Image (cartoon, rainbow, N blue to C red):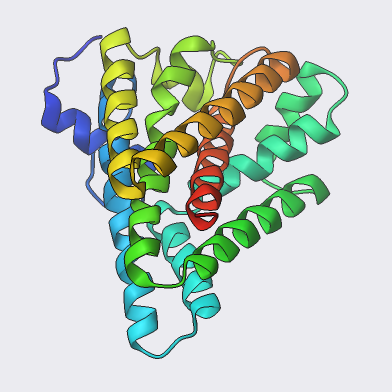
Length: 251
């Protein structure tokens, strides 16, 4: 780590990396992305709260639950700049279309999206929107949004710590490896927020299914490209968000 930075700098860096909020953070500072991992669930909480507000406003304006749900997903995409959705699409294209590790990484770096990527995006938006529409009322939907956005991002430092970057350049290599304390803080914050927002029983079920889904995704990433990239992290986040919202909607 070449430059000292405190908790506030790390929180701002996490906000800059995970959203399009114009905080002007020096995300390229060596080591700051890995060090800021503890704040990922807090940034996710903010994103989820803004999405919950969008859902409430849409319903107050007279939108039916399905319309409010789609607008809420759109609000999340605007806040994050579709960063995670782009990672999901690139990962689906690379894993599905490449025959070798090198081909997969090359496809993932291509800004154009293919059939696998488009289908992955349709499924992601469709599943999240359907889950929110099923929840219906703004209170339960809002709490589920906070849990989904916080919990899905809380897992990223653990995954970054357990995998190695698949490239020598790019966001994955730039981010660095979060320390054990950073990963543990993120995991605990994410778990607490998920349980508080969804109730103990539903929260524990969501965390168990989230862990299983991300463990499977981690194994797939390791087999396909030998580690993670920034796109793969975005894919992990989308999987986590979908799982938590589906569990919340199944109550």
